[in-house]
Length: 321
Image 1 (cartoon, one colour):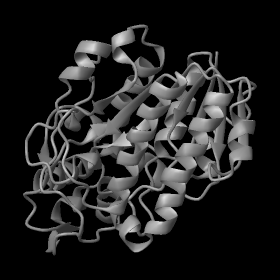
Image 2 (cartoon, one colour):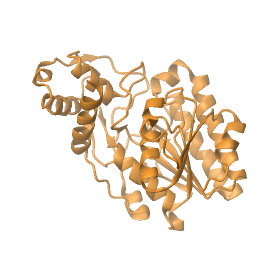
Image 3 (tube, helix red, strand yellow):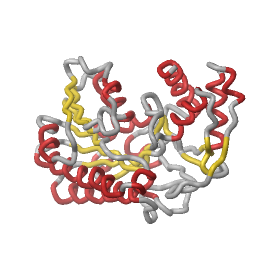
């Protein structure tokens, strides 16, 4: 079987590439390296079952080339980050909407068996209810959230109109090995880890009581595999929360990071934590119901935030020091 992983040089994409190569799949990676990194592919670049196409999902010809002979598409390519979308909504829309549509068209024309794509918990918007249930969403709170919701609408239309099997995975705050700690739009966990390791004071946005369903990368890999391989017809042409199903406040998160990093460097325990203003577009709390994924896909997340943080902290310490 041949899989195309768009954004395959990124954090989630490169982990997916490594995993499916280990399962003896042939893997094609399409990436323009706007946010992905070549070093993420170092361990697999010479694998004879791996091929890299440097291209952009905003170019339909690149998408057509990438899907040649492909059985499944795992679409991870996107411009993430709520703040980035607020600062530059046009580019976010070009990549996340126009690029997504290009990939759907290319996949349809190539008669791809199934199109599994990275959706987002940001789609829940101003919905107040917890836990978040797939069928109940609110109004988007950022340009990024709009683009990810539009992805779901397009996927549904392509399923109904063209018969393309699609499954969307609403990722909840994914973290783990290879997640970039650098740059203006770095995710909170790798950013805090890097700051602690440099004895810099991390800044929590708000009072620290905002909470998230932090989800370790290996849970996300498993969800992609289940979505790609399921034979349950009831399970396709829909969306799933992709999470652990528990929430952690930012204050709790920082406490766990200090505890686990202090095992490697005792001085980190003394690093002070600061507080700043809340960030525009942020929702106060996020918690996923994973009942639908359990029922229809047989999903059983293996890594809690504690288990995942221990793994991630060890990886960062061993790879970034």
